[in-house]
Image (cartoon, rainbow, N blue to C red):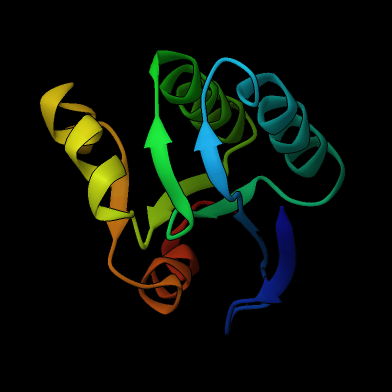
Length: 118
């Protein structure tokens, strides 16, 4: 899983995580641990690039929801971007597309991180 740390124009760190393959029962727990580590030790501002994730099951959605809650507890932000078309269907069918902030590009997701609470 690729990880980058970028700064917003107002000097906030944002972690961008880019998992690959499947986000399912076999990989979701590792992804969840990575999210917890990033939120607690780097920054609560997280962007998940899902361009290389072509399958998400309920375990994967649960790890994303848990990450979003963890970020919100720390007054951070949690955004998704570049959602793979096959994975996007899961968000639409489960209506999770109305729960998450989903952006077309990393840049769009990062740009909105400027306005989050300190």
